[in-house]
Image (tube, rainbow, N blue to C red; front, top):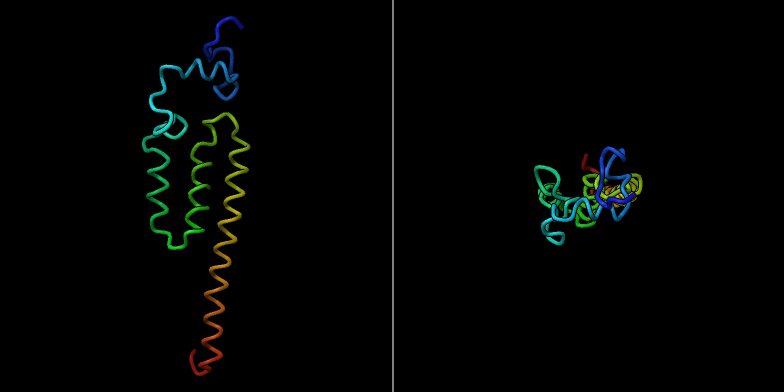
Length: 123
């Protein structure tokens, strides 16, 4: 390939592009790769804004952290060239989120059971 720029006619998608093609294709199109990277800004809202909006209502910090990573990987899974890897990472964090929710539920249930033992007349 003589031309290092990405040619959509020769590839199925940008996911199929080589690193060199990807960089050449995005050169000049990318503004601030630190504060607003393209794999987070290619929708109406930036991923960070979506994540912050959703997790701010979560009271458990472990659940919020896991949820933020689930969302991060789901929102960008087609944008960084490794969609299966990003979905697997999202799944890993989702499993952690479930674990933290189960632990939280177990603690709540334990408290209820202890109260019932202390106060058997409570329904």
